[in-house]
Length: 484
Image (cartoon, rainbow, N blue to C red; front, top):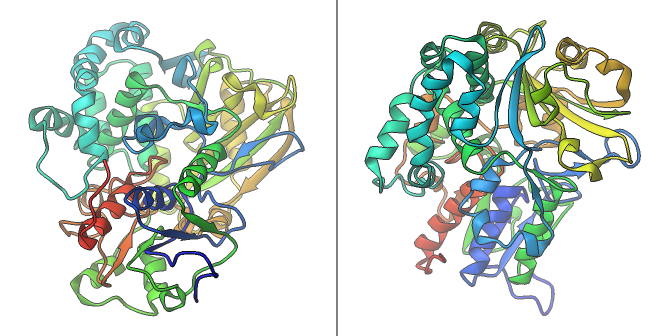
């Protein structure tokens, strides 16, 4: 496949125009390379698109909706998002965790402010999070920028985080006495999609709570798709090209290039290579594990969700599931291949800070629960029951809904193998050695071919760091100066 007349042949080809693929392309283009991005879907975005999924005028985020990692990301901090039309709106309450009886714990503002709402556990919360949040400028780059698994620049601060982060959240939660504090920790740690007894589940919770105190949990005004619009605009300003509607089935069909970067998982890499990958790394990639999927629901509502607990009405994100024991039970059932009757659910309500998502007086609501990989079960009824549990009258507000089962999520985005939105299970072993135990995690067994998806460090989330890391690896191999 050649290049059109008058267009410089690509130095690098990026397959996949999700946040990581585009981040890789931008990084390469900044270094002076001619970059071509090829995307199979009709529009770029991957897990970061916004569409009218229910009714005209209701803008829904198809997958990713809340962006603490984008706000904290070293990659996005190098882009003038405001100049490119992106406005981050940060709710007063980052996230809330309701309990029966109209109670709720919530994280808002500073450690002191949040601790003040936790009663008997306020002191324990300050003791745990005070040092972690003070050291956030040192630890976060170490967590999000594991470019070549280098020696940390602030080992003491990182060790403090890791000593607590490596624990199962079921153990860390014993530092608290109240259902509110334990529930707050369980709800955010369950983003890991693992049993709460699994090692390193505390790390997920601590990192997301530290970031919430540091930069908040913002949403993008108008929808997450505007982040993608900004990345495409940045890339094209640097001379890069984006081609959509072209699924790459084989690496042999790509145009010649000095480097090929793939925003795909190891499973798609093997398929595109035409069979098993060579060597020990190929065997390790074949053993890469994915994990549970999600059933995703979007609602068009006639008004705001009538939460019983006041903090939930100001929260951009609400974690549903009840007590720590209930959340733990739900996640354990999912990881045993079962569909819980009372699932742990994540709910995002953009209308708290962004009235542009729906017609005047109306609201959109976004939510999902975890399900076994490859599930085709519609969990919308069980998710709505959990919302109704803490917001009586919710069902009366529903104007329309859109449902994607785990099977539907994979059909929407092939990187969501079995419906797994993190492109790989986040176990302790697969977090440390992601995707394989190799010093440079972005190289593949194929010369000049790199993985830049969320299957590489630092993992899932709209932060672009997997893409930047892979691009830096490619540039180093090409002998090209890496841009700051």
